[in-house]
Length: 245
Image 1: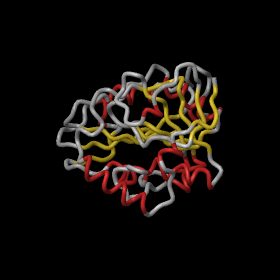
Image 2: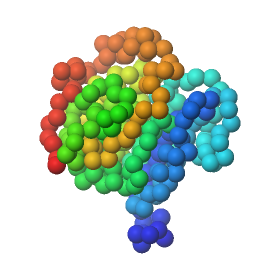
Image 3: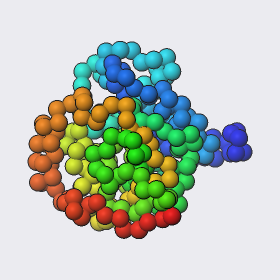
Image 4: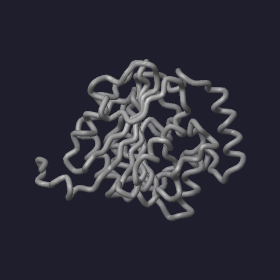
């Protein structure tokens, strides 16, 4: 029984699917510990390691796959998710290894995701983070916002209502680039809400996002991927439908 009086069997399960770079600086241990501290959810973590270094002792029991050579992120995520029955879980959270989560992140974040009924969601990024799309930067004073865009990283969540339409991830874009412009079309088609939670932002400043892969190649793959799938242009994607204070 946890401090809130709930037993693990009474709590809904969530799955953390994470990837860490074993040969690079990372904070996967801190992230996994923060996830494990949830008081409201039964948390299962499955991490994949990329690199030649062995997992740190604190990550060993959570590391279910190891690859010495680079594997595109979303191919690897599909491999991780194949090892479980997805419908055992209320939410799946996809996490990178280079973010700083605020204390109590998981319970605070999922409380808002659940309250606003976001099937696809992400936390905003702190002001001092590396930010590819300014749209995802924290908006001070907001609790959350209903959007037409959720970024593919460094952390996002899927509710079970979205599994049939989003999973497995489309491997035509193995790094995931462009998914975040295809997802809103799928979400709207199936009546699913997307959103960004501003109240519990994450910091993403440990490593530059494009430091360890070929940006030009991934961009070409994304453009080809989007040319063959219904998707939103940026001018339509970066739009707040509703704001919640």
